[in-house]
Image (cartoon, rainbow, N blue to C red):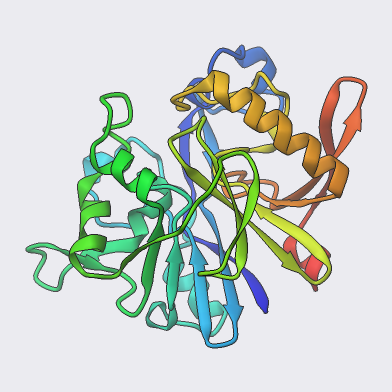
Length: 287
């Protein structure tokens, strides 16, 4: 097995929305805002090469939305999935599986693209299976009013219409379970959105956990620092607490999907609770 970080493109989000009830005077220390109150956000995906399989975890927001849509998210930099895959010697047609932690547009938008004549949509990875789970799929395809703007039907329904959609089996939220379908473990959590999936991968003697939106940035490590986007913030708190304590106890390495400055981190126990221990690049840990 070989792992590769894949940069899908950077953007910005409102700092207040990203930190909920936490005052800007506090979160601005770790996630400095620009003049529009926007903070830097990454869409850092993970590619797993395992035998004949090439598994991509999340795909960023893609490029098919309107100019008006992208004007809300202040894209910056020149990274995208195609450039990132090319640097690694791969093409999107090589991808055998796309695993989506959840179906918010900034995690799955790159899974679907316009068709050739722009009359409809098609999978951006024509040879891949798209993996979600049944409960989250139902949640996303029948969205509540609060999340409706994040679950875009053009990002989601073409997966099923193409016949390429598959569901991960799940048991109980709140504990890791092995995914026999893909060869890595999955933690189901419900605070951010229903049945978000957090992959954990045993690699070169270490445990790497893909954080998705359970821990968006280093600035979100303190327990009350919960995103305004979370649908059940009072559920995020115990889910996050349990995970952070386990991560510190067992020396997990956390792969930060959305932290534009910090690629991988580790945690430690302190008198104030679990806090940041060390920051690493991917190459420092695994190469």
